[in-house]
Amino acid sequence: MSVSPVQIDKVDHLEVKTFADRKALGDNAGRQIAEKIKDLLQQKDEIRMVFAAAPSQNEVLSYLAQDKRIDWSRIVAFHMDEYIGLEESAPQTFSRFLSEKLFDLVKPKEVHLINGDNESEHECRRYASLFNEKPIDIVCLGIGENGHLAFNDPPVADFEDEETVKTVTLDEACRQQQVNDGCFSSIDEVPEKAITLTIPALLSGEFLYCVVPGKTKANAVQHVLTGPITTNWPASILRDHPNCTLYLDKDSRGGIQWDV
Image (cartoon, rainbow, N blue to C red; front, side):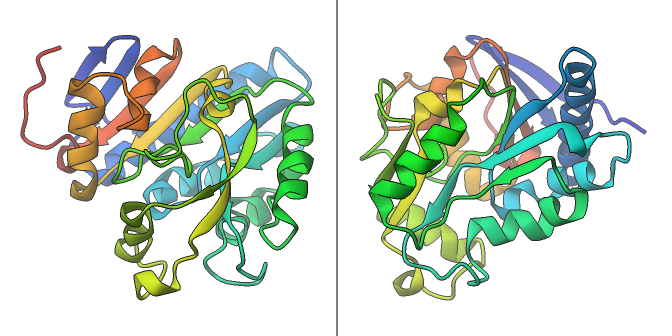
């Protein structure tokens, strides 16, 4: 049974839906993504999707994996980013996370994974070529504690980036989040470099679904929604996208009442 959001806001072009708890948030976001997938598959032979890999996405990925009405044999899947220097078999790789949470369960038509073990510039060119073959239909993303989208941290975020995929140096707040999320036991274990889709690449998706649960995201959410659109809080650019929905729970929304 669908649970209605406790509040719906509009911030510029961005629709913001707040739910009572993380489970309600994840189920509703998953349901709406699934409905959009099915709607698009009635209009075209295949669709192309991009997925974020983070614990914040667990409920949405679980919902999508269990929805038997989705024809994954007509879906081409990408992901957003990957560490440089971790072995492919390392449990912290995002390719492994998404394979275990979704791809191995639903068997999409094609799955394109970033290989952080490959020479970085070659891998960026290879992945960009695959990504740019056809338009992206749906992007499922989140927001980092520092406001990043994928691994576009504030120091490297560029709203006018001419690249599709690039190598980046991760800032300390981003690396600490990986510890906070339980992916690494200490910041020293977190790689310093990564490969990421750029912000224009992410925004090229026709429909964006941004899932942001938890109190650790409340500060970022406040800046993203109430401050200026700026690379200091990269996710603020979502307010300019014509078809983006942001899903919050009461923890990530925080106690503020936005003047929007």
